[in-house]
Length: 542
Image 1 (spheres, rainbow, N blue to C red):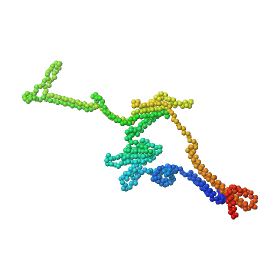
Image 2: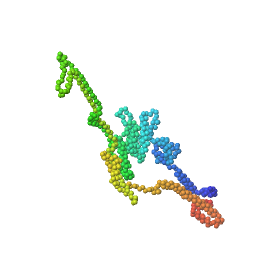
Image 3: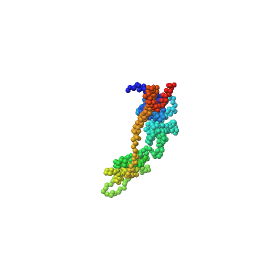
Image 4: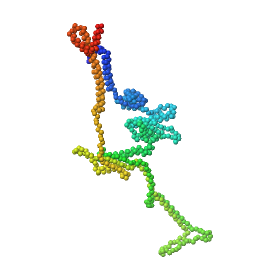
């Protein structure tokens, strides 16, 4: 579109006739418009910054900034330099790239401290560096746990001694800084204690003290637990046993009475005592035919001898003794033959001994009782009333269960829990109406409080503010200024025309009234301009 050359020249002439104050105002207005437009463009194109890392040490912060500069990633600081911000769309990518470089390393030093050992370092310095590296490595390992934000480990390692009575056991103290809303259970605390204990030679678990950032003692000495009978493992086993019985009872009754219509609680009395019994019993003796022969010994002895001369030496003694004859008696039966009488001088003796040993019936028993055995179970079951729906009236009512239904439920629970009356188990089944929980009705947010509406309104409001500022500058400042410039130009032209008319009154007699009216109108609208014209006239006449 071509620009009309005379009009452009006339505008330039008009601008040249402006006073210095008017020119400065016009320049300020144009500069403000340009600044608002540029600021709005920067506002729209500036990326949203998010936190990359916070609470960085000076060493890690310098290394991360150097890496960000190499990667051409813009950054800025927030919260007084405590947080490092990068564009939101580059947070995760930047973290992954920095992780490949091992950043941030943290303020803790590990065994890399030993890489800078110098020649001639004393043994004491080596021991101190080793202890510092071990503390740093343990702290890094503990920080890998999800609830732990940071950790500090302090080791007290005594000097070794060649005397047994002078030897001391090492100890350790662990300070944990947990994330907000996170906590450690007993199993996790015990795991940390065992981790530290296993990493230091001769360090006992009972010598590890664990404290959180609020000063709460998380670890409890093992001796105190054993003395009070509160073993965490036993307590956990008791809770798991009770939960197992509760789940079994509710699972068996839910299909019968419906979901959310049964509640069960179990109290278990477990025996954690360790008892070992050894007994040796003997039964009464058995008959020889039923008993088992262990050993048998038979001994037989036989001897034969002849009578020889005996007595006082002499003729009588040298004579053999007269044969011994048994007295003859008449047999009872005369017809029976008589036995011959031995007249021999030889004698024969025979002896037989027999010894038999039988096995002894003995029983030896070694009994070790099971740890955690059930001594007694107490079960309480609450069943809701039965739900009755009337299709015709479209109403819902609840009625108690029949006695036979309660008996069936009781039998089911007994079989499920393994009811044993001899060990003192108890069971109580109650049928009652459940109280409906009070449901808190949360009214929905009005449309003007919805997050989407608020975000859209914020965006629209931001654009409207920019547009309003630009329109105010254009319509409120620049446009009136241009209008005043045009009026001033018209007034100047009219003043000049009036001056020409005054100089040529005879030639313009018919326009006297119009010129007079125009001069009056000009005097009313811009008296300062008329005063300047008159002043110019007066100065010219002089």
